[in-house]
Length: 198
Image (cartoon, rainbow, N blue to C red; front, side):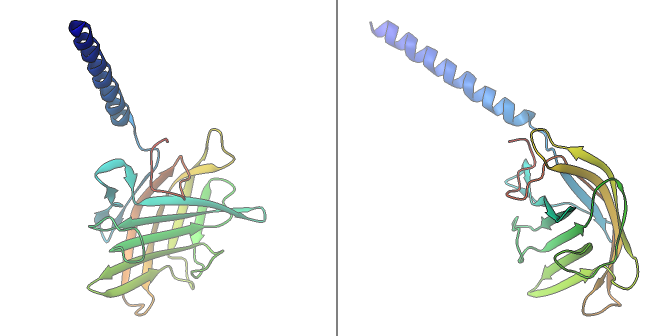
């Protein structure tokens, strides 16, 4: 009888171990659906990872509509403590209005709820600098290279790039250059920072 109990316990532990390995293997197999990276003044810039998990990174894309006009808002944070709020060391926010198809979109509106704009925020040593696109000349552009239908959803993802010069809103002689900003959103994830399939 004791021998059967020991055998059953051994079998139970084996099943549990195999089950855990399968879950770990499934997690290892997950690949992010979304990506975001850029160069800021010729330095590579990428959002922070959360707990060193490639499925959780501090960026997301919102999809909204006003009337029949769809628009996307991309927000990404970089912070040594993985903060993703107004206290984050860096934040970029890009909004593109009236995205019905692929193409070139000039970014020249002032910051506002229903405008196309780009903004970069730097928080350091208790000081905040806000850089924005020019509202008087075209200094920034977005190229939407692909519209990505999302299975089981009415939403459409996007893949594209952004480049531009953003100006300090207090001192227009101070500017930053964002180049080779590439993004892919196969998943619209405004509610969290999970970049993998859930």
